[in-house]
Length: 309
Image (cartoon, rainbow, N blue to C red; front, top):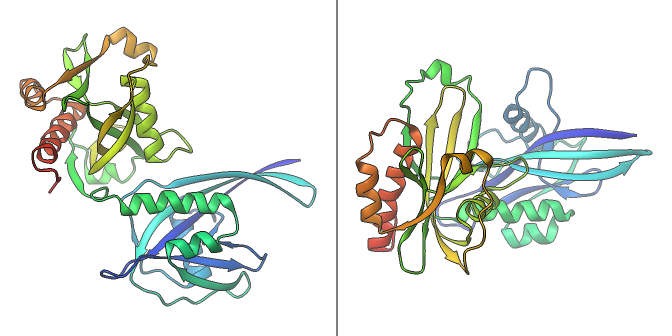
C-alpha cells in the first residue's frame, strides 16, 4: 500500500552579530538527527504548522521568517509493510534565542551546530542537501533586499492577505562583451529580462538556471543577487528574485512554449544604457515592464561600480 505523507518544518538559523551562523538540529527518539517538523493540524496553514512544531519540539517561538522561498524535500520509505511517499516543506527562519526546551516524548537531544557540524551530524542525505541550499540562500549577499513593491492594480491590503504567493526568478544576463542579453517580444515590441516561475520541488537557483537555458539558450553562473520585488497581481502575489549572472559557454537551441513562439520571442544583446533608454520609452503599464526597468537600473550600479550598494 502506498501512502502520501506531508510535513512542514523549519530550518532555524541562530544569527548573532558577527558570530558564525548555527543551525538547530534535533535528535529524534527514532534515532536520527534532523530539523524540527510535523504534520498539519485542523485549521492550520503550512507556515503555522511549521511554527507550532518548532515550539512544541524545541520551545522556540521568537523567530523571524526569512524573505526566501520554502524548500521542498521528497523521498520514499517503507514502514510496517507500507510504502510512504513523503514530502516535507521547510521554511528558513532566523533567531537570536539559543534557549531550547526539548519535547522529551519525541526528542532525545538537540544541537546548535555550525554548518560543517550539521553536515556531519544530520542522518539523511536529503536533509544534508537541503542544508546546503539553505546555506547558499542565507549567504548570498543581497538576496533578502527588497527592491520594490509594485502594485499597479491597486490591490488592497485586505485582499492581498488572501492571495497566494508565487515565487519567480529573473536574471540580468551579462555576456562576454559586457552587454545585456534580453528577450524581445516582437508582437508587443517590448523587451524583458529572462526568467519565470519556480516549479514544484525546485529551489530558486534551479529555476534561474532552467529559465535562462530555455529562454536565451545559455548556461549561467551567478555574479550576485539584487534582491526581490513583490508584484501584486489580481489573483496572486509574485515574489520575484532578481540576479545578475554571466553566460557560460556557447548558446544552445532555445526551448520555448507555444505562446512564446506565437508572440515572437527573440534574444537580443544590448548595452545597458540602450536597454534602459528603450524601456524608458514604454508606458510602464504592467508589473513586468516596471520590474525590468528596476532590475536594469540596479544592474547598472553593479556594472559601473562592481557592487549593488
